[in-house]
Length: 242
Image 1 (cartoon, rainbow, N blue to C red):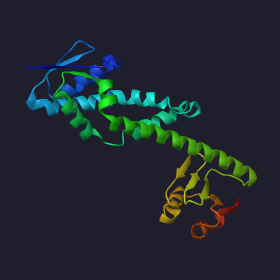
Image 2: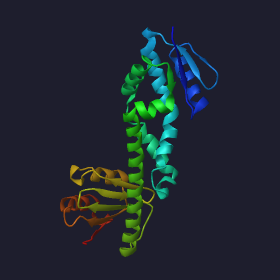
Image 3: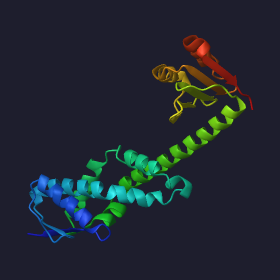
Image 4: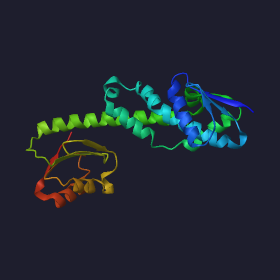
């Protein structure tokens, strides 16, 4: 009976420990020398083995492979730890486990040596592409929020108003996207303001003062009317033309 060897040259015991834990949960007998894991390859349990291996590979390597991909971002973006946290969250949203399991099972049926990082990078391109997309999206969101904060700072200087603890600021753009800030956080929304999502968000925040900067070039007249109807004299609107 053939024996499979599972190892990682880059992640060593980190991977072997994760794989041993998954194999134990799956009821698969194995032995390990701390760096390598050895498993008897039984054809009738190859699917169960493949599931355990693919889970261990993703769980153990995703944080480190995501950090490696972060190196491709500009320094001013990747230096912020929140970007890495956001990238990890996004990377975990897409479930590619059925695909990873199929590829792992196909590989193990023909091979007895499994090197985790090599298999991940060269045999699971969809997983790596998904993680790279998560890193890119996290970087784009950070850049968009930074730009929005700077724009809010400039607009506040040009249109000064008294602030209190429940002041909310809203920027409306011509493409129906918007920026919403409650003083503690900045939220960039790419969804259309015509869908009615903006008003529920504002109602949930219950601002005592709502400052609206309309940069849409007159495309949000209906939304502005609804905002005025809801918030009345608590609203201050600045229509800014280029």
